[in-house]
Image (cartoon, rainbow, N blue to C red; front, side, top):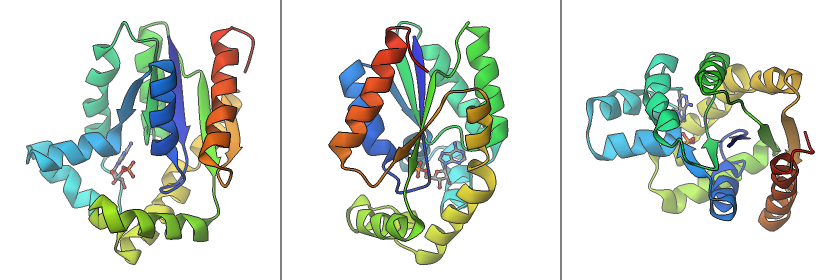
Length: 196
Ligand code: AMP
């Protein structure tokens, strides 16, 4: 069982890469943003709560996010791996995730950090907003807030995972195929037991 995190700011291409990897390796795909949007669509109490934060470009509180994801992790004991997209986004979330995995004799095996300059991110998000139907992809103020939150709350995770020697920094301006190839190669090394 391999656990992989797709890491990076909004618009970096985490979802695109995570979906390709989940198809290629048969990993379970866990995206907290999608989970929240499903709750919002189904008008659940959790959805109403999450929407309040998402519409402002803020992070949903750790406690809410962690409770939602706990079930997902234990739900798939037979999976060859899990790929996390958009989770963890804070140190607290990462620590809880480590604990949960440890309880099952597992760990995070690789974190792929997609590096993309801010002006490109904004353009990508605005482009996605033309078709995604996501309010948080169209309002420039919300986008700015999401990027700020990334820098203050999420980016410190790079150091956290680097210290655990699982961080792989990837130039996110390369083509989708090239990024997919690079990441796949690293995962294959890990599966063969011969790579960081
Ligand atoms: P995403 O689809 O990953 O861009 O997430 C959309 C929004 O959902 C984010 O801007 C946050 O408001 C919320 N969200 C998604 N994942 C998390 C998380 N791990 N922790 C807190 N909030 C999250």
